[in-house]
Image (cartoon, rainbow over all chains, first blue to last red; front, side, top):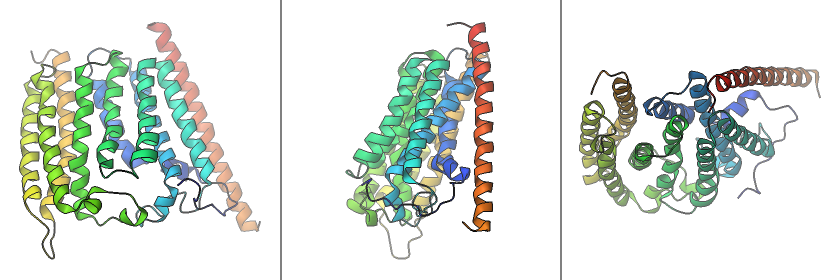
Length: 308
Length: 43
């Protein structure tokens, strides 16, 4: 796959903005948000400089693996309308430059995390980079319609790493934060995939709605939504949070199930506006942001002694 | 290379150099700050 990439013909140096684009800045906002939540919600203190460094290292790791994803998928990106203007398929950058930039950024991020914070957090960051760039992008994404589930694992690392950066150990709570994003990703993405016409099929990526059809996709959305609910509530159940997070998790998860239900039970009609799917997709974004914000509010309130 | 291309070449190279310089300066300051924090709070 990596051997037939479009080659740039330009003699001009690549714009620095194109290197920045390689890091997928929009995806990075979610990475940074969940990493900050992991740092703020973890028990213990971290100096603001070190907290900032940990989040910077996580963001750089995400950027580096995103650049490697651009490098590997240049051919695929060239075949899809949404991605054909990216720096590599657009011919604005040499393919090797994207690869080297990705490797450099990833290596610096792991080194920075190890030196400034600790080598457990650094090892997790390295694991996250390898998971996204190699296991997901190169290996499983083109091979299985469950690729979104696997990709969700990559997005689930930031709060785990942020938490471990503060505590220096892996406990049940950061694993639950990982699991929340892991199980949240499939209903979030597949709801989108149901109403957005993508051209993944054209480039040979086996997305579930294309390969298995709508009905199994709707069933999978329901299954993952039902699996997500107890996992989202678990931090409260095991005593890791108070009623503030617990009540938010219960209400949000109940709403998620209520919104997923019509997506599960119905089928597309002619001239369908796909309103239940759009509502579920929009709510899924609110769900994650509010859930993590509630976690931070809960933990800050507890550490300040405002609640028992 | 035409004069226009050369101007664009120089503009891009200059912009990249500024970004690299800014990034290096940022990391110099960051590593200084990390070192100070680490010396103040060893372990």
